[in-house]
Image 1 (cartoon, rainbow, N blue to C red):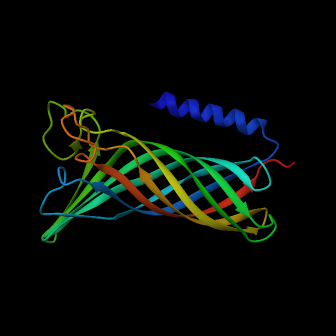
Image 2: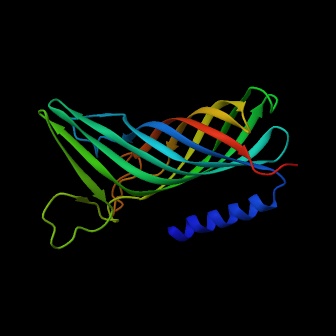
Image 3: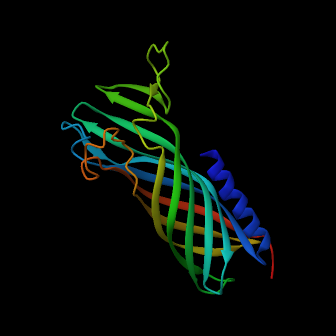
Length: 233
């Protein structure tokens, strides 16, 4: 998987070098996410709700005209869900490395207030995470590790085998925002919705339908960024 991300980064770097002009936008964001989980997987005594997290990374905007641009991104994003019970809840936070490739359309003059919208696919990979369990006023936190449980395991961390889940997450983002020039660059505020296509839970025996095993990421994010033009015309 590391080779895939390195290849994407290498191609992006070559494209950036060839462009007459491009922008880089460091950004941070707040996310709320949940999984769309089928009844076959969900505990009948629980409700699935949104949980909060954060995201950080950078976007690289490559102009392909006066209005349109291609915007690859590299993001560290927290996703997950909350399982709510009568006496408490369990928060699942899964950390992802993501590479969205967005088609962006911008309206307005560059030296004034601009509005923009975008849509495009993303490729994500689950790195690990943590679980927060709150029950009857008591709370505990465990790390989630995507590897086989060790032979000397004595409790504490949660190990999930690669045969149980899909760490690769494929989906799409759609979003919109506004940018305002300040100093040498421009501040931007944007909101986006992410729809995951990949089922997180695997079915090793292929005995269930896609609908029966539905456990797909749904994410809403709000980002604040600052765009800097790295090369002029």
